[in-house]
Image (cartoon, rainbow, N blue to C red):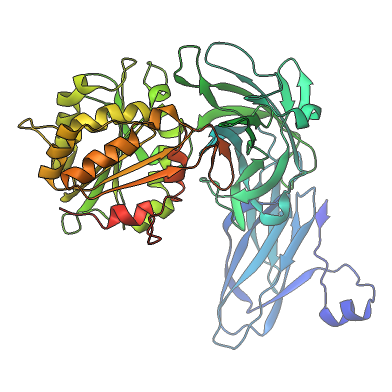
Length: 532
């Protein structure tokens, strides 16, 4: 049936008078020769675009436009003619989508009765399947599933969705095949038992949903929807030096195997549509990839000499004319590579912090090299491998050789110390070193460091047995004339201002840039000031 536009006159709307249905008239000369569809796109259930009209002569005549073939509403926005020299105009067209494809033919009838047609094929409402990726985010307590990014297949505007648009539930399987589901310390939060749905499934608490770009950034108009969920862990002090940790159900994305290695979990995520979304018919939602933390993907992960992996972050501002410093950082025991966790050292204790905004701003752009050992761990046996790796990375990138920094935590100090005391022909000329939660420098080693002339920062906790040798190491360094500092935190669990950790986990003070000297200089600032 032919559809005729309702002309809405502003004054009539204001007076709330009824408006009769009538054919649309548009200004043009009788010599219309262009009547053709331009670009169209689907937005919020409407097929939106324009029809171009062109004529010769002045536009003080009127011609009729009508249309046929549509099943839904049609809205036409006429143009106006500003002066007699104007010979073109554009009709704004909005056609409501339906569950079936529509062929809508617009017809312009000239004063002499001749007709021009413009045919618009209107796609049906999108009925999927709709694919989504699961998102992971790292924070200092660990690695978590933090939401999803849905490729809607059509364009939506910002008000098309909200946190109540979707429902989601998840089931997480650890590397060893066990399904998460228990409540308690280092498991699901006992305060959230209502989230459990049985058989390992748990409800995801959606805290926000919004239209986004392909990277999950909020936009006013886009084809993606980002779902943010509740995922931050809860911690509390426990005893003299420990901490309890409770996870939001079905959100932990990595944990340590029985052998003590960080391992990625697997997730099943079911998303259903809870309310109407403009432009979407009934559709199924299909799980796609599981994405790493965005910072993780900025590292290039490759094979390391002698085995294991290494991850390299390159700052955006590095160039031949702007060589940047590099920090080499060695992980602890739990972050060793076991064949299925490449980059596990980036998220096991969030070495990603060094690629994050605060550190990169303080260093004005800095390379980060994070080697990942084999299951054998770090020791002097890997000295040749690591000197080869560091020298190669320095030679192949825009690195300031006067600003090569090195550090490590726990077992990682067992690689840092051989490097900073090396006397091989491939030794690295470091500008500064950090030892955290471990390390023991004897007098002879301190003398070697003194001869090289770079400062050392020691960080640990009084309650941590692995840090017991740090005071003696400081004494040896100072006696040898090394510019050395130490921050030894009081007895008790580590508290970084937000989370509690066991006493051994003092690296969280470094990652959060809490470590300060007597002058209030943070450890990031201290590192930025070091140069050979």
